[in-house]
Picture 1 (cartoon, rainbow, N blue to C red):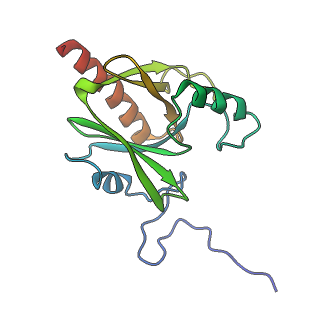
Picture 2: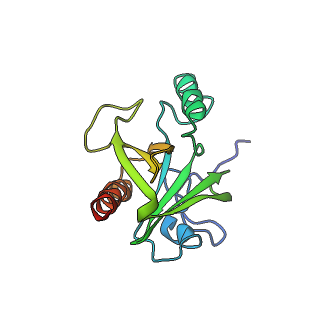
Length: 168
């Protein structure tokens, strides 16, 4: 007898529906638990390397280089923006396990657009290199899914850092 599996995007047992990234659709609400201000955007990012996981044959070497440079945060990182901060939350097991990877104010953050690896070149979808105010890079990420929320967060990061650099 064949088993049937529910692969729909419908909520189960009171949980919100999952997005294509495996994170609950209410990513802003999830990020709000770690933010001190109102979350204006939240999206899942991955390392700036080809493939969808750490053991991907195409992206393994690139991920190891990111780790060696110290810019690998995690395989899945929820980046959230607020008017005053950027919050990074490491996600594990489909967002069931979470760890605050960092929280930065505008004065502490530099964000630079860089070419996204492993995807078709598109200037509308850059990867983002994040660094602290001293210029030490600590994350190089690209959106996991190219959607409106990812674009909003990416634009916000780049504008956020640009605003901060003009005020210094």
